Image (tube, rainbow, N blue to C red):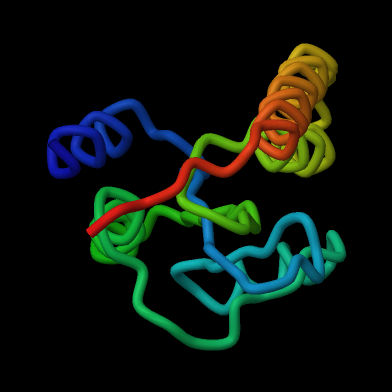
Length: 141
């Protein structure tokens, strides 16, 4: 699949590829970090104030896309949303949208993602309150 994507990009003279991923952290320190497939791409990310992931292994389609793009001289970057657990995180996705808007000069509205995050957080809070209010069930062995 990545070969087909990059071949299409080369055939259509695409200028760059930006892919997205997440990074599970113990504590959030910045909403979004980045990696690139060349020093020029890394410098562009740094110039935008995006912290660069200093080391690591980028697996999956994002990693393969960056590698295939490098082989074909196509600038490529990956934006990582910091997440605390491996579950969907609309607030983290909204952070990536904001960075992407800055990178590309676009104005995609992240508000629907933020509203979804608030709805999820509200449901989780209600669930926690329900569980805390229940009496413990004795366990017999």
